[in-house]
Amino acid sequence: MKPVPLPLPADPTSDPALLDRLADAIAGRGPLLLPQEPSPSDPTAAPTGTGHGPDEPDLDHIDPDVLPSGGGIAVGTSGSTGASKRAVLDASALTASADATHARLGGPGQWLLALPAHHIAGLQVLLRSLRAGARPAVVPPGSFTPAGFVAGVDSMTGMRRYTSLVPTQLQRLLLDEDAVAAARGLDGVLVGGSSMPPVLLRRAREAGIPVVVTYGMSETAGGCVYDGTPLDGVHLRIQQGRIHLAGAVVARGYLVRRPAGEDPFLEHGGLRWFRTDDMGRLDEEGLLVVDGRVDDVIISGGLKVWPTEVERALAGFVPDGCDLAVVGLPDPEWGQRVAVAVECTHGSSADLLTDLLDHARDVLPPHARPRLARVVRALPRRGPGKPDRARLASLLMDPGWENGVSTPEQEG
Image 1 (tube, one colour):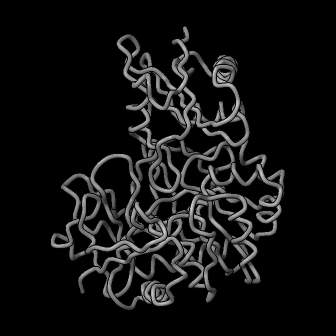
Image 2: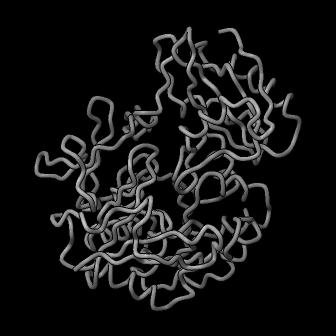
Image 3: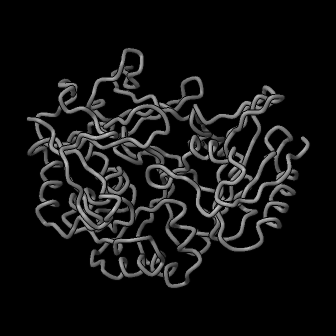
C-alpha cells in the first residue's frame, strides 16, 4: 500500500476523521501516513498536494523494506544538513514510545498540543492522547502566548494532564503568573527540541512546574531519554563519543533508502541501534549529557568548543525572556572564532553585550569566549525550536543583519 500524505492543520482536533486516521496508524491499520505542515500563507489551514515538493521524498523511489504491513507514520527529520528524510515509525514503535512515556510520568492522560503537529514532538502529543483514549487539547492557533497556553490548559478535562514544549515557550511562560499557575497544575511538562539552559530549568522547577527534560529525535519516535535516563525498553551507549540508542522505539529506517555508508541504523548484540548525530557522555551519576551535534563543534586554535556548553555558561547572564545561540565563524588566524547571537527585544543592546562578554571572561576559558556578539530580534530556527546554526553563521557574517549590534573582537 502506497504511503498517503496527511495534511495537519494547526488544530488537528477540528477534524475528527483526521484523529481517526492517526488512531488507525498507531493500531497498525490503513496506509503509512506522511504528516505535512500547514500552508505558510495560512497557518490555520490544511495543506494540499501529494507529498512531493522541495522538502519531500520522491514517493516513486521509496524503500519497500522499511514499509510496515499496515499503519505507521513516516515523520520528517529536522536535521541541519543533508536532504530531507522521513523516518518510518511502525505501530509498535509508536505505541512503545507512548506507553513508556506514560509509565515514566505516572500513567496515561490527556495531552495539550502547543507544538507544530507535523514534527515528531507535536505528533506524539496527539498520539499519546489517542493511545490513552483521550481527545487531545490544543493551544489556540497562532503565535504561542502565555494567555493562549492558559486557555489550552483550561480546556483540558483529563484526570492526568500533560504537555510538551520547547525551551523558548517555557521562557515565555515564566514571565506570566497565570501561565506559571496553569503549568504548575499539570502532571508533567516535557521540554525538548533544543538544549535546555540549566538556569531556565532551575527557574521552572523553583516555580513548581513539573518539567521533564527530554532527548530524542524522529528516528526514536521522539524523546526516549528523560532527565538523562532512558525510558523503559530503551538502550543507550556511547561509542567514540557519539550517542547510540536502541529499543522498540527505533524507526524501521528512512522512507527513501540512503546511499551506501550513510545508513545510521545498525544491528549489534541482538538490538537495532540508531547512531545519532550527537556527541555525549555519562556524568558521575550515569545520566546522559548531550554535548552537541557532531557538525556543530567549533575548532578554535586547535581546541574544541561545543556551542551548547558556551550557551549553558552564558544563559544565566541574559535578561528573562531572551535567548541565545552560539556558532563558529571562519577566522584566518584561529581557524574559527566563537560568535554569539542574543534574541532580545528589550533593554539596551550595547549594555547587554558588554555585560555578557564580561561574564564570558569570568566563566569560560579563552578559546571558548565569544569574539563577536550581536543582539537580534529573532534567531533563525528549524524544526520545533532548534537554532539553525548554519543559517545563523551565514547571517552573522552580514554586518547589517536585522540592524543588530556588533562588538569589536575581544582579545583572548
